[in-house]
Length: 327
Length: 305
Image 1 (cartoon, rainbow over the protein chains, first blue to last red):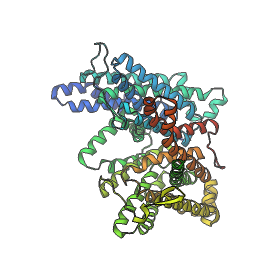
Image 2: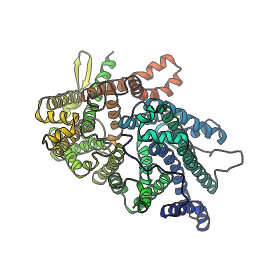
Image 3: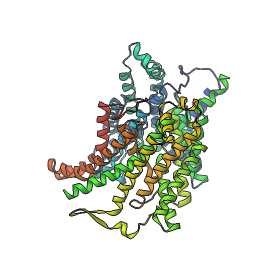
Image 4: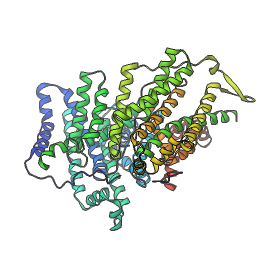
């Protein structure tokens, strides 16, 4: 099944001026200037919301790397958000407040978990892979619920954000916002370099036809596993950011429906496109926010929207933007 | 020892409930090649239907019959209105679409029945314990669950293996195009299979309703257990689902009951108290990982794929 969805292979971002590029540039400009708006109007809610957007977009970018480019539909991606978050939370509770320790640990533990889960689940494909990643994420979810010392089901409040020895003050909302923004841009850059490298070509080739890639001599399992681990590490970083954003972590962070949300963000934005995950995250969180303001039952509308996206909107929003050019 | 037997019975009971869910999932996957995340919603709907009909009719049996019929109907309508459009698409589209359905159903239930859960009271004689072997008392209702689910499993076996419609279902799982080419109304068959899966899930929900609170999202965590069951059993295989359900039910129940105590023997009280709950909930996933290492296709891989 991995070969059955094939977004167009994307080349290095073209400098051609078309609707899609203009849209992305405009979106990035708005995101970059958002703190200015906040400072002028004093409306800090928007910046809190968009910090969350940026963080979850890192998670979506990471999921897009394996799902969009690698064809590995992981339904357990929220586990990394949880692992990254709990790495920060647990270390903070044990008195280690330095971000120089917390964040590398968050990334390393996520990468390790990805290595184990990937080594087991990449032996299978298709629907097995979906269900197995889901099941392992659920396992971590229950393990965290069992950690009584760290709040169990009720979650854990983080009393102090990660400290970076005076270089970066995460308590300053604007600083935190720009840190998220820079890290998101760095993730997108990382993914663009990765997928256009030889490594990325092997990964994308594997998505199209794994048997053929193996036949010409590539150990596809190892390539996929490395890709899976990179994505896990990146999403672990998003988890560390998320814990600092909310100053609170709970198992709900890694409930399997959160993994579903991440899949929705990627597909909604555009599978296998560089900026698709960001577009999708913005669209999804804004839609959620807007719906919860107009109705008491937002999912009554959101659910059918997702169904319609699944049935009709193949390339996501990114694909819609490209549409005209292909005609 | 008494406690052990009691826990074994609880494990069998959980296993049989998982089988009812897993059978529907695996049938729908085997025949329509559809990953259905909304399967747990049908289980939830079954429980809500039962609670509602029990209030209206005042009879548990009437509520059971009505709720299962309503689940069957709900499943068939769902198939015709929405699910049908996802056939032949890739699994990612299935995940996205049925995830949307799951959100929709949770919200629909909240709209109709409100955010508070419901309970389904049982007749008095169901609540008491019965002496199954000398010295062991077991709640009557839990025995009823075991017998009823075994009976339904047997019925399912007869329908699939011994009737004409079952033959078509098996043929559909083996080769869809051929069945359609032979003039069978494949759309109707799909609707029926989906309805059957929904009725099984609904039945599981009804049986669980009296011992759990009927609440929103009740189908979500058990759905993942059902996924684990069909991964272990082999996707598309009903026999595999049956065996794996019992294994998962027993291991999960016994693990929760005994693992913390066993840890106490090996570790300090403090460490055991911390690790116990965490480790016992991991047990079935460890089993799943072990099965994957040795049999990536599950214990009973379906012959056709």
